[in-house]
Image (cartoon, rainbow, N blue to C red):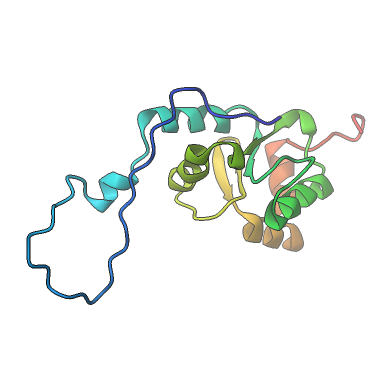
Length: 158
């Protein structure tokens, strides 16, 4: 399932440009931003609400580049492959293509406080990105985690 957050989430997030550590003195007083860096990072209520709704849309939710059928980056493809090898039930899975919505792409990074995509959520909780999932898959933690969360295809369903 691919979806885009609801309409009205079109405002751009404010960003502060990085400044060089050393620079020449400015002959005039530079304008002061009315927002602190922390305030500038805060998501709009509409964006937060749209992401909350997406995260709650299924027990297993993946924010990725592309779609499960056609991932647009190697990391997203790796996560899809891991979820398939683990046996995640497709009826309990939703994927959101962040390439379709720039605000979603940036907003999900602020929402999770995680700088990269893909991002996996299980039962509305952030699990991690590609590296974390790969490690959990390799050491067996992911299989136990998915089993505890009851998101795997049951043997009779396969």
